[in-house]
Image (cartoon, rainbow, N blue to C red):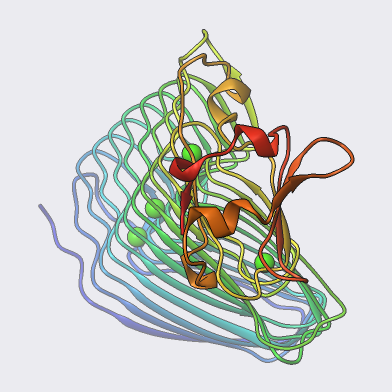
Length: 393
Ligand SMILES: [Ca+2]
Ligand SMILES: [Ca+2]
Ligand SMILES: [Ca+2]
Ligand SMILES: [Ca+2]
């Protein structure tokens, strides 16, 4: 295997410039990319910067190097894209373990797109590396952050175990964050990823669409065991944070991983597996055993299929569990499931105490009155259906 040199590449992008930089251009098939350091400064827009850690396409048994990217971006109307390894990966290509760090705090109307391995598709037996992606977004910003492939993972592809940390530092912005790819199909497997989204103290509005694996999972795609965390540090006018442990849509024979979702202090939407399900046959889609904690604010929660745990800390707000013991049914399966609600943090003496605080609302849905201001509504469940086994007190 031919090894490419380890380079340090320093780039400066001015207004009205378009700059593309590759770490290892001409990497031969079966070659190994160098461990490159790429440092870029963008001074103004409109401009476009593309950094690729290795080469256009990784094929055969090529390995991407372990590259380190640092981009400091300022200006109006900048497009910044960083591909940890390549545009596409196929064959038995392996992505390197890359560190991507883009700071676009001082920008307006900037689009940041960071991909741990391939900007577009991974196919064949391609494997993603274990990448560490950090993005800081400016005002009126849009960002896409993906641990492995920017479009599809197909065939026998495997996603790496990535860490993605995105902050909305500017006044307004929105981010899409995926642990593995946009679409997973075939036999694709997601890695075990950690996704963190923070709305910073200066932000007036922040939004994130976060999925532990992909937007769409179909075929026999299998999600990893992911951790998703959202935080709101300041007091913005509005937030819109939606988290999926696996994907927004699961179809065919997709399998969800066992995920942990922790919402922000504001109202969030948390789905342990997916929002919509299109099974090939009755029980072809399986969900993971997920842990959901909406944090403060009035949260909407769906555990999805399989036995999930809902955790409520003091100050949890007025939350709704939309599919308590109904997740398998939503995914088309008749298998029994047993979700559990953990209210240990509220310090009740026992089940009898808690039971006395549960009653049906006017629509016939059970409402657990934890405090005068904290409630849990169980959509489609009656108070009389609940018993001690449904709770951790
Ligand atoms: Ca990589
Ligand atoms: Ca991944
Ligand atoms: Ca919340
Ligand atoms: Ca689940």
